Length: 429
Image (cartoon, rainbow, N blue to C red):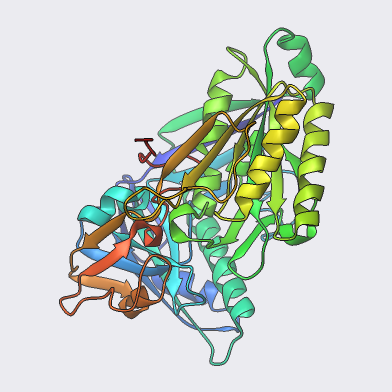
């Protein structure tokens, strides 16, 4: 039986130095070396690297993606398969993690569906990234670069930086080690014959610019549902190019630290048998939705699933996928829990989901993206503050003269993330 071992190096501070390394729990970054590495992409004009620590009066905007630095110990394979090196199967071996650090990609706006992170104040309460040591890449493209090429260049720069920093963790002592067994279906059946079999369906948006995810480096638009080991997500098998809305964007960081996967693994062999993850593309056309859902249903039945958890990615039309799966699963005796968030209006009185079905009788929702907040001015803005007037959750006049911001939490990165990483919930009244 194989296993994945996560070795976490706890980082207490980040600074710049002559060499990229970890000394006494401090990550030191050779800024010039990292910038030089990233600027090998000729579509990028400049990159500035900024640091944002918890409690500092800093605002990062616009944010495209967030990634956790991770690297394989043996050096024969790389995290983020399909982007770095080969697309060899992942989820086994030893992976080193810089715990407490996040790589944040920012810079010129690609499209209006990008968000913000406040490192202090009321906005910080809505995002786990306010509690991270953020290495922010402020990336500016060459002139007249198309939006698709711009998004690609920024996404790949974030991946390269996360791997580059993760390598520093392979050369230092680790603080915590977690072992995850990787068993075959027959091994699980033989070991836990009487425990209920549970499958996790991880929806990944595949709907075009800033609405795409990548599975082993392949755009999910061109993919049928894929069966994955739970541990493959921890190695970066799913990379986010999605900003459906900042509040419910499942970033690459969220997928690397998917709490549904972690909770199911914690119960594996105790109360249930966790038989795997299905990454399901969510497209816009009805035929594409039906194709994906019926393929997921087929895979789940083939695996002998008796229960399923389905998490949404994005909002609006992906709720049709959620409800379609609930109908297919429940009518076949597969007990199903749906995980989502809601857009219920600023007063919370509107219908929060775009689609419903009687079979969806077990739903977890992670907050209302229309909730309204006022964010105070910060001492430093990393990026371009003026874009708040056009991003999701903002409006013309959101940026006030004193630097404060009036915005719905839809514009705050991960505030209602549909994997359940935050602390919000929706209450029926």
